[in-house]
Image (cartoon, rainbow over all chains, first blue to last red; front, top):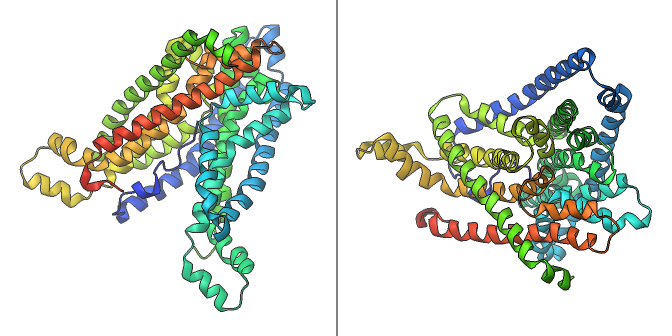
Length: 270
Length: 214
């Protein structure tokens, strides 16, 4: 499942972008910075209140121990950020490489492959990797991380290529003109200008990974999916809803962090 | 592997059909709701950014979490699958329909009005055809996403190919488990590619020649 960016193919964008549509996007940006924290605070207060007042039987109380919720949250965050780090380490250099003259013919294949990887159902990919790698001694946690990394590569790879290719050619020539090497222009001009686009791809990947990490529990990979999974298999509504709520709030929080990161990483001049 | 597929060909074909059918019907339903809603949003000032933000927030909710929230209401089975798949199919189409309708040049709408067209005629014959390429792109994204969501919904006994994945997990260690897992992944990929090709064809046939890119 791919999280929709402003879900447009760039060439399908309406040609005439009048000023009203840019201010619309700004207002949406602003809403996306304010609304999620409010929802998360409201959800957390609701959950805390319910958890401390509800009468739970021993199974539910055991599954919803504070220490247990804390452990699963930490695991979920670890799954998400370790995978995202692997994605960045793989996809950004690969994307940059694919924009170099020599490797440009390979770009359609790389994008095609990444696209196909994302057309694969997330749950199927995790289970397949688990059955395949289970004998190798890798834990469910690390197998999940491999699956999540594969899943998150596409948005970052695609945006790195788009971002670097979108840099004005005259700026690169200007860089060469003031005596920069081609590595210098890459580092100081192309990469810097591409950062906003790459960061937006990273945010998409983060949300995708945080959501998919809820499925890690199927292969004993841990995370907040565990409570949800227990709830569905034991048919305990309190566990289902608690698990679902916690997973959703964490995903929302991670998307919000991604947005802050995006703002912080934007070059000052732009 | 081929032996395995041959032995189960009938049920694999049936589940593939069900998977495609679930996704196509839900995307169709979602498109109708989303385009109608977008037409309303496009007429009301100030609603667009709110619709955009709500759609973005909706997309951050993991599908497995939404399934968990829905089960107490819709129980195990097809209803839950339909609601969840439609929900995720709805958001990208809504977003693109809002953006697409906003991108229609206002002078064209005024010309249409000048020619004596009513609001409904303008929507159906001017705005929607011009916004259709953008909406169409949204439908393709929705469809791809829905394929994966439908696979997850098999865990709560929804129809489709996801059941092979969960069978594989349940029979872990047996000889057939790996085959089941492979069908759970590649069956869905193949169905997704076929449906996407059909959607491209649909776009080719329905996007007005005057605004077609390439």
